[in-house]
Structure formats: C-alpha cells, structure tokens
Image 1 (cartoon, rainbow, N blue to C red):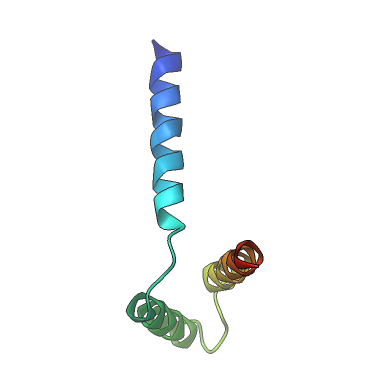
Image 2 (image 1 turned 45 degrees about the vertical axis):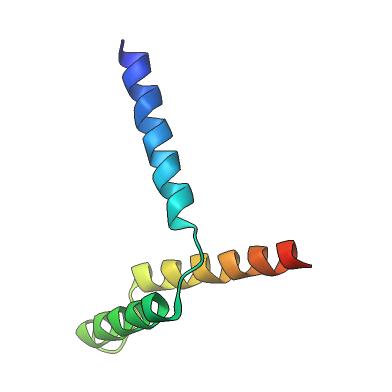
Length: 70
C-alpha cells in the first residue's frame, strides 16, 4: 500500500515538473525578472542563490531548446 502511494506521489511530481518545463512567455519572463530584481534589492544588492539557480535552469532549458530545433 505504501509503495502505491509513493509511486503516485512520484508520478504527480514528475507530471508537475514536465508541465513546468513549458516555454515561458514574454510576460512570465518579465515577471520573473522583476521578482529577481526585488529579491536582489532585499539582499542588499547581492543576487540570491535561488535567483542564480533559476537563471542556470533557464539557460539550460534554452540550450536544450536550441539543440532540439537544429
């Protein structure tokens, strides 16, 4: 029984992860940039670790999209 619950939870997590990998629209991208700018200001001018990770994920996603288009 516990194995079924774990499998369902993993499947749901994977589904959300794949849904989150959709290409971002210009408004969503601009909103994220504003959020990052506000976080940077709150951190005294230093970019937060979360922002750095988000930027790295965005760059990796764009690299994969570029490779799959060519």
